[in-house]
Image 1: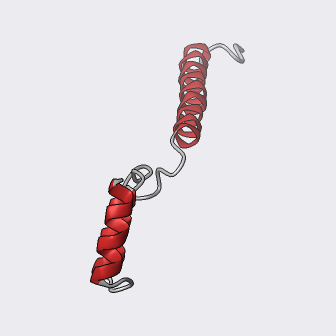
Image 2 (image 1 turned 30 degrees about the vertical axis):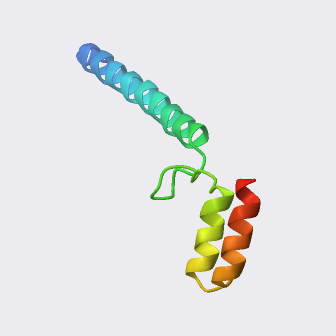
Length: 82
């Protein structure tokens, strides 16, 4: 009889869908990898590096935490201003 004559359109549709899934998956994987490489440190909640603190901000932090006295704070602040 007519063996093999009845499912040609089915295989063409199946093959086309599989090709779309393959290339779509490959492109999607490439995009995920590119995003991961392009944004180092993106796993932190801040999303990037903090700006560097100025010397006066560091001095104020040390005074606020009690590392230095009021006299030391005033002396260093005058030294930084000059």
